[in-house]
Length: 94
Ligand SMILES: [Zn+2]
Image 1 (cartoon, rainbow, N blue to C red):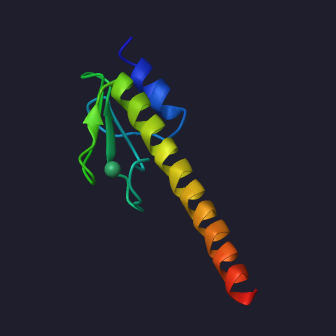
Image 2 (tube, protein in one colour):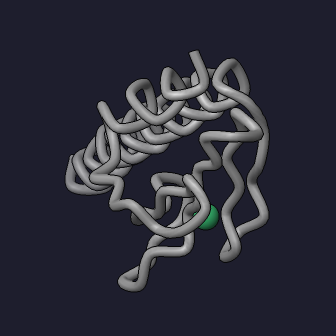
Image 3 (tube, rainbow, N blue to C red):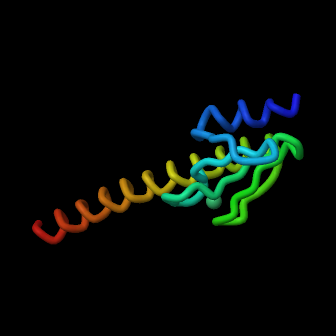
């Protein structure tokens, strides 16, 4: 049961055994080169020493969803801006 969180989070992050049943990997919520994302098998929780994100398995899923959504929104924002900029430029040429 306690290992479930390791398995669940291990789907998206490459986790390595750390100490005292803790696992460590690169945080999916902020950019980093040195792993600071710790998942505790005993506590059934995760926490990031870099950005401070923490919680249980459900929180992890929610945060993943949020970051996926915000990435998608940023992409759509950029696309929308490009379309509007192009239209503006074309309008000036006419
Ligand atoms: Zn982080």
